[in-house]
Every structure is written in structure tokens, then in C-alpha cells.
Length: 338
Ligand SMILES: NC(=O)c1ccc[n+]([C@@H]2O[C@H](COP(=O)([O-])OP(=O)(O)OC[C@H]3O[C@@H](n4cnc5c(N)ncnc54)[C@H](OP(=O)(O)O)[C@@H]3O)[C@@H](O)[C@H]2O)c1
Image (cartoon, rainbow, N blue to C red; front, side):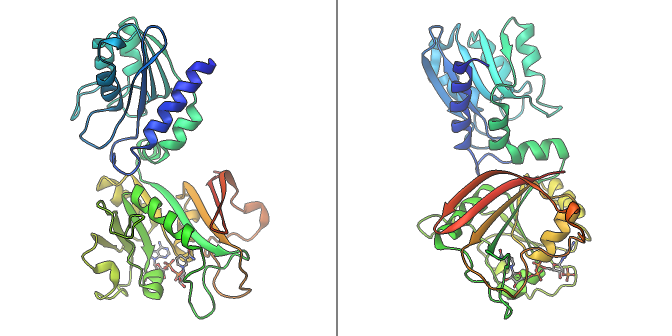
């Protein structure tokens, strides 16, 4: 990878991130177009499902200056006609001479763009800055490869790993700033999943709010796992603020299968400890994001239960790729090792 290739794919990753929360069920994609002399002449990203793809937006910005130039894209340009035409063809029509992309398209439907470009005489380089591009698109890539939604388990805990006090209270373990970040997480997913225990204990609304406190225009589906029908119709999850699915799925795998069938690409698992244990035990958590508060309880429920792990060698390790201080809490995020 040349430093220049890395720099422009890096910029394309930044552009792709602007689409998080509005492109589902499509991927987030960013694109930078350089003219024949190496000047940036167009930038674009996929803004919403049904809208133009990143390459088309960047090529539109570049116009005739794209001829003989280079396109940097976070995902292999698509090769199929969906709601918009194939990006591989759009790049050819614009006279692009070189294409650099980060991650191959895993979709049987849209893949093959690199081959089509090569066959037409375009110089194509893949795999540049692949880890960064995978990270920004991990929800969609997981769904495309595993044929189930990507699952982030998010929780708040005290420094000694408690998620609620003995009397069941858990509001608020984490700081105001951490709780605001949770609304960012909610805005980016298609569904929020909680167990009946959490809904009965806390009566959460499970909606996404904007930084100014107003309801977000796009609300994720609220999913309550309630096999015994214990959650009353008066619970806040049944208000009009968002749609709600009450599921009696026997296992997390069955639930994810069902959600995949409904076109759900990403899920935020918001607890509680019993349900999180069931998902982890089934190997169905792709990312863990913890907000650890600088407080101690010494008693009360643990952040995680029911994994059936009995010996330290079976502990689930995480590949941590994010640690930050958030309003006095420590945010730790990583991917469980399989
Ligand atoms: N600090 C945090 O981040 C946080 C987050 C969430 C909750 N909490 C706290 O956690 C406590 C509630 O804990 P909890 O463990 O009872 O809540 P939970 O995990 O939300 O709910 C557990 C219930 O989910 C249902 N469930 C449905 N499908 C399941 C499956 N496949 N596997 C396991 N359970 C399934 C079960 O009831 P059925 O058998 O009836 O279906 C089970 O009793 C509250 O005190 C709450 O404040 C803390």
C-alpha cells in the first residue's frame, strides 16, 4: 500500500461513517475521486438506502475531471442493478483509469465489480486499509457474511461489575455523557433488544433521542423477549414512540433468524444480564461495549449471568479496539474472540 493510497482510502472511510444510521439495509460506503494529476476532484458517500451510491455521488462532484483519474472506495464497487445502476459501470463511463478499494463485496449479488473493471482495462487494487473499512461497516459485513444481524451488547456496570443494586435500582450507574452516547448507538441500529426482566424492572422506553432531547426521526424497532408473556400492555415499550415486537423465540439464534428475515441488519442488545449471557453462550455477540463507572456496590446483580462458564480458561476474551473516558466513566469496546 502506498502512503497516498492509505491516505485517500482513510478519507473515504471518514466519508462512509457519515452514512451510519441511514443506509440500512445497505452498507455505508465512502469514495474519493482524484484527477489525472492527483488532485481531489470529488468526494461522496452513500447517504440513504435508495439514494445514489458513494461512487455516483463522488463522480457527479468530479464531472469531466474524473477522466483518467483514480477512485478510492471503502467497498468493492458493486456490479449489479438494484435501485441504482452498477457502480462498476458508472466508473467506466466516467473514464476512471485506476480503482483502489478496501474490502471485497461479500454479496453474491453485488460482488464481481473488481473483475468487471479489470476486464475493461482499469487498474484495480484491493485490500487497502481493510481493517479500518471493515470496522466502519462491520454491521453490514456481519449480516452479509453470516446471514443474521450484527449484535452489539451494550451495558453499564460499576467498577466491581455490578449492573444493579440489591433493591433492583440501576438508574443511573453511568454518567449523563455515557447515556447520551447510548442514543448515538441506538440511532445507528435497526433494532434494540431487551429481555422481559429488564423491561419489568426498569420500564425503559428504548427509543433513540437527539442531543437536544427530541425524539430521533428514525426509531429502531424495539424487541422484547418475553416467552412467558409477563410484560404488561401498559409498559412504555408499548407506547406510540416506536414500533415494538414481542418475541417468544426460544433461542437467540431463532430471534436473529426472524429479525434477519425482516431485513434487520444491526441489533443493540441492551440487556439484561440473563439475556446477554444467553447470546454470549450461543456465540451471537459480535461487539461488547461497556460503560464502566468509577463506583463500587459490592452486592447486587452482576452485569452478566448464565454463560455457564466454570473455569478461567473458558473466559470469553475480547479484542479491544476502543477505550475512552466518557464523563468520568471508562468506555471499553471490543470483539469477542471466537
Ligand atoms: N446496567 C445495565 O446496563 C443494565 C441493562 C439491562 C438491565 N439491567 C438490570 O438487570 C436487571 C434485570 O435482569 P434480568 O437478567 O432479569 O433481565 P433480562 O436479561 O432483560 O431478562 C431476562 C428474561 O428474559 C427472558 N428471555 C427470553 N428469551 C430468553 C433467552 N433465550 N435466554 C434467557 N432469557 C430469555 C426470560 O424470561 P421469559 O422466560 O419469561 O421469557 C428471562 O427471565 C434489572 O435490575 C435491570 O435494571 C442493567
